[in-house]
Structure formats: C-alpha cells, structure tokens
Length: 417
Image (cartoon, rainbow, N blue to C red; front, side, top):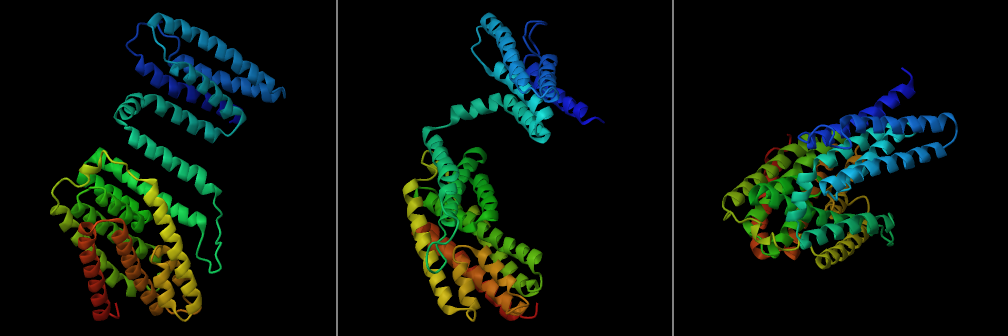
C-alpha cells in the first residue's frame, strides 16, 4: 500500500474517532442543528492530511498554513452561529476541530505515531469532561498548591541540578538527592489522593504497595509524616510494614534477574523476613480504629519545609557513608554494602552482584545482600523516628526487629538452603 494512502487513512481515522465522541455527546440534538458531527470531524482530519500532502508535493509549506487558517476561519464562523443560537460560550468544539485538522496534517507530514497518540488523547480528554469537572469541583486549594509545588520540583528544579558527585568522597549527587526528595513528596501526594478516592484502608494499601516498588524508604518517610500530621499511627505503621515486605521481594527479583547464583542463600531468610513484615502489617491494619488517614484529608499532602530538611539530612548522611566506605576499602564488603543500603538498597545489591566472579563468591555476596536488607530496614526505621511520632515508630520497630530476627534465625538454621 502506498504510504501516503495509509497516512491519509490515519488522518481520516483520527477525525472519525473525535467525531464519534462529539456526535455521541450531541446524539439527542435535532438533525442538522449542529455544526459538526462524526462526518465533519472525519473530513476535517482528512482535509488536514490533504493540505499537508499538497504542501509536501509542491514544496510550498505555506499551503498548509493557508489551509489551516482558512479551515479555522470557516469552522469558527459556523461554530459561532451555533453558539449564538444555543447561548453557549464553550470553545471546546472549535479547539477540537482545529486539533483534528492539525493532527491530520501531522499524520501525513510528520510522525504518524505521535499523530495517532495525539488523536487518542484528544478523544479521551473530550470524553472525560464530567470526570474532570467533578474532580475540579472537589479539588481544594491545598491540593492544587501541593500539585503545583510538586510539578515545579520535578519539571523545573530537578533538570537544573548536576547529575554528578560534587564532594571529595563521591557521595553527594545533587540530582539523586533531589530526586529522592521529589519521590517522597510524590508518594505523599499520591497516597493522599488514594486515601481520598479509595478510602482509608484500601488507599493506604494501594499507595504503600505501589510506592514500595520504587522506594520503600520514601513510602515509610511519607507515612511517618502523615502520622505526625495527625493520621492514625497503627494503620500507617501497618502500611509501612507492607512496604518493607514489597522491598524485600523486589530485591529477590532483582537478584534472580541480574545474578541468580546467590539466590539459594538469600531466598529463605529474605522470604522469612518478608512473611514477618506481612503478618505484622496485616495485624496492625486489623487493629486500627478505622480512621487511618482520614483525619489528614484537610491537611497539606506535603510541606516544603520538612522536605528540604530531609534532603539536607539525606545529603549529610550520604557524604558520611561515602567517606567511611572509601576508608574501609574493598575488604569491608559487608560494611560498605550496609552503609550504602541505608538509603538505597538497590545500589548496594547491584554493586555487590557485579563483584561476583571477580573478587566476591556467591556465598559472600549473599551475606552482603542480606546485610544490605537489614541495614535498609534499620535506615527506614531511623528516618521514621526522625519524621514520625513514637506511636508510629514503636510498632514499626517491633515489626522490624521481629523480621530481622526471623531472617537471621532462618539463615543460621538453614545455611545450605
């Protein structure tokens, strides 16, 4: 098939897709009472593709610009007459028509995959009017401000920071530290949203488990700060225990994918500790008073002051850990693995696995990975102690101690597993 024909077909399909949504929304209107429906939007997309093809064939790009301006003028004129008749001040239909024309042109003259994605996104946004308007009505100023701050932290500040270590010991990477800080804020905000949408218990479970896939440390800090802000500490501590369980399971998966040789030594104690965290988390959630984080729904999902303080503490500890690891050297695998795992267990595990076959045997690597898991659990506990109240950290301390003890006992009793 001629590529041009296929691209023109895509331009037509984009218009038809948007036209279906527009036509369905106005399906009860009398015949010929609407400016544009499924056929008009379909033809608008095809027209954009035709003008793009003509501009390319004649090597006259101005043709596409002239076509777009002419289409915009005619379409907007007809839409203005309809709006005047209906006393409707919405400009959505006009913007949708212009978007269809532009995407049709892009399908022919540009990246057809981007055009297809744009068409699907345009139709989805148009179809989500009730959902978006409902969310906007329920949105508070505190939530909007938090979302804007998070956007600035992520899209403005993060790209400007250098992605390299700037201290003599190689531990202070501004972008990594700020990324971790943004991650804490994002998990706090998403957890807040999950609790509002799904309710206290289900929202905590979803936000904790999903966040722990990325960073259980960030989840624990976010939950501790929620508890300090007034949330019920028992279910929050239970969610932190479940996040710890997910972290252990994630490390086991990483080991199996990267270097499975030490997994036979790692799996039994790691799974025992994960099972202990799961049992403690379930028990704490069952013993909660049903309020969970409900008391914090009117509070700020996160505050910039505590986040900046956390970033500062993280930077200081990172430099100290790097300096100590540099002095210990390669002979202190356990010490360096444990130190680097205080904040990032993945770095410790991957660094250890890369040494297998060179200077480290699989049993040594297994011990180092288990030490990293234990150190990471203690690091989470220390951060929770700084960020949250004692009623949150006390049950988490019991769960962590029980998990480490059970994992150690399993390793001692089953050394050949």
